[in-house]
Image (cartoon, rainbow, N blue to C red; front, top):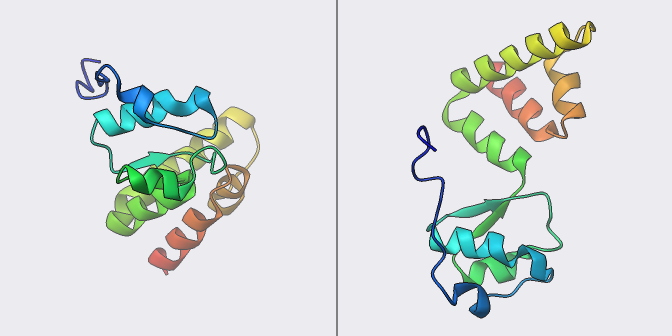
Length: 121
């Protein structure tokens, strides 16, 4: 909390009751996003966060690959350093040689791999 003071949001009473989701167990996520004035929900759970439902609240749905591609477009050098450090750490931890492409494919981030490849060319 000390490093991310805005990470906790207080959901106003009654907000969850006016929201809906295909999975009632996910309404609290939507409520937190609305209460925190988020721009998007970052999830791979497209089924329970349909774009139309989110649009009603002014929210986008992004999967991790989309989100990280956007970061790479905005700060390619920074993202290349982060991914490079991640590849080095994966290699150290596993004892196997990893490449950016193989690690990002395993992490289900193929778009990020393509974006970094395009930006570094």
